[in-house]
Image (cartoon, rainbow, N blue to C red; front, side):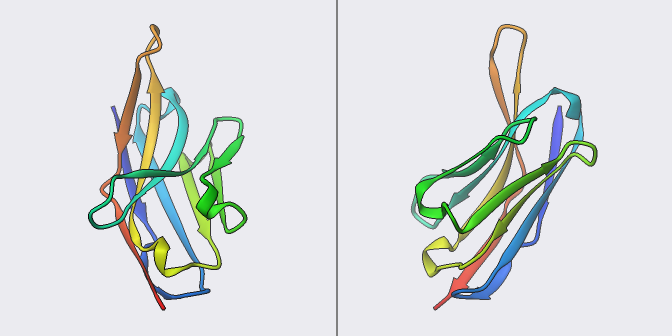
Length: 120
């Protein structure tokens, strides 16, 4: 089992910056990728960025060049630096930890979510 706790959300004006953090506990050695998702009201949860154990990162098109995901395996943390924020970035942001069983069954562990609101 993996437990995740996010922090760092809040209210920011358009063009501003925020950094989200997520701390993992429990069976952290089993974590493969770590990811950030977001869910806006009335919309489905969508992948924002992901990072592998060896720090290979990938980003959704809407955030490329503005967001940076990073990871510290020693501290079991993943962060999302968000710059040049836009009102359309407003959403609840969720941290996700991915584990795989020996037969490659993927399991997702979710944090409780943190609200990011960008005012225009």
